[in-house]
Image 1 (cartoon, rainbow, N blue to C red):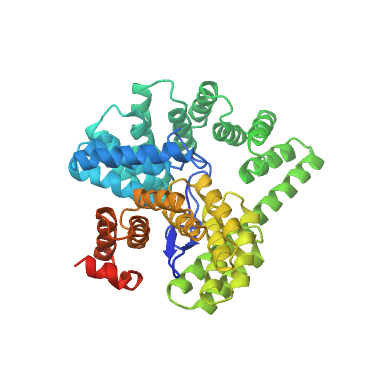
Image 2: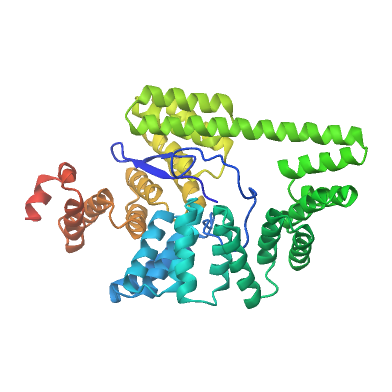
Length: 466
């Protein structure tokens, strides 16, 4: 599940990003369904590392279709799917909503919107979307499966069971539905039925670690210590970091009288628990820092982010956020060091690569900045700020052709970015030696979106726009 929300700050021409640990800016540590609960193969996570040209082509084709038929729900749905693949969840969510505005009975749009809401941990909203999807498409198996998962997460086991049983009537070989029903039976204390469902899920889907763990827990509750231990070991072979499975194995071994091995596993469980506690403490400090940052308390935010880093030095987000705060506090070297630290913690951190590139531009190292922007785009192909920053950097290198292409890509993913319209307009005017029709359009559109950018446009061009 995605757990980051992105906020954009625009210092001068380049864009820095800060990231939250959770969409609500507050750590959400609650008891409830298993942490690895996932019933279907459907996901709204982005295809990080997707070939950029394919993503651009898909978004471009969808936008062209919308220009031809602005009220086409199918075209807005296609745009949403393409934006989601590009890593642009917020824009994708808007596209799915637009599709539904055009046709409220488009079940697939409700389904896709539900996936995005689930990624944002908005379980009730997601449940509402999946419910609408199955209302208009009663045989939509994946939507019913997702709806069953949402009911599980919300603790409504009766409705979860109803949906999952419906899934199995539509597709008796759905492993996710058997797993979900196993969780319901386990919650209800019907251990034989839970065991049967978990075993069926495992037989239908090889290496189904979550179902293996559910089976092991069921066997443990039945006091079948030997078979439970074997099942926990199988689960740990697929996920060695599972606290629940490690603790369960230790318990089973202790019951079998294998004290030395049990002590080893209990020690591993304590270490895993300690790591979880460290992360959640750091996550809370990171979120507190974001609240202070949004409130304008830069010093307090910096202190909170440093506390998060002190608690968990390999947690990438507070490094990136501290870099953003230090940048606003004019500590350029400190900001640069934090962006680099964020990437050392997580090499696929697109936002930190973009921020590092922005800092490198200000340091005058354009070539390395371009590398960072390209790395960000390799991880998140639809990242508008990285496209814009790359375009600006290429302009500094006097690569007008490359810059123009990147400005167009920026606007393909974010048509409302006024600064990109302005910069593209200025570039086109420079190429044409004056206000060409394309340059006039881009400058006019940029000023329509944000009149405060008039200061970027030379007076001679402003006269021509009247």
